Image 1: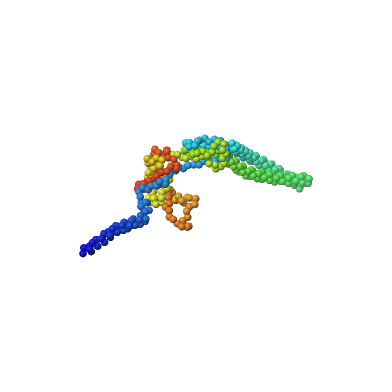
Image 2: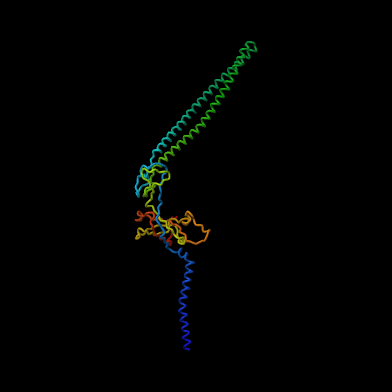
Length: 364
């Protein structure tokens, strides 16, 4: 009996020693299964969403030449602060000043042609009036010749007149009728000429508008010879020097609108479950590790970064490996913070979005 009890006790001990590791394996396996199936839900449900794939950005502008010519002056230095409207680069304006002068002469000539046509129209009205007077005179002569013919006809019937006088009166009447018809034809021709002048007036007016448009284009080109700052900011490195010849499209200089900067944070798609515009963000800049800045989620990109790549991925071809995508989130800094003037585009930051707080009023 003692021996049997010892054997049972030994078997129980072995089972106990095996049960503990087996239980650990089962628990670990269960944890792996749960973590695998619920990981995205855990990540998306976290109150604080953090990423270090974030950088400071600014809406910088690369200024290019819109006209060709020799660079006369580069009025700023590298990394110089400028105001909107400040001259940055001056291209030789001589050619474009000549074009403006030519265009101005064209406007003067077109205006003179239009004014001269107005004078011709006034003269044509006078010519028509003169033709109307000539018609009235011809009609009066026609009436006189008709009456003379009728008188000679009456006299010839009573043998008081001569055949010769009747023939002369008849011829004079025929001539007077022809003169009336001729005067009416002259009036019609002069009125038609007036219509021609009216049509020509529209053409001259169009020529004047075309000359004015050419003058405006010439003045625009002349204005393009002066490259000015589009907004307040800081210039980048100059890409031209005095004496360089530039063509249309040549990059001249960049302007960064400091301190107007923002953050682009590339969050994993699984982190954006609860992210909404207006939520507060804590921002740590690598250059200032002991400082914390505040901001708000401004907008979320309409697509992942891969969709804007030169060659977007096509997962319908070949083998497929699922990769978690990142979606840019634009973050706006709160105003009146001491470090804003020292932030530069390209700096690395770490952002922490607090999804537990409600979005600020007016967030879009």
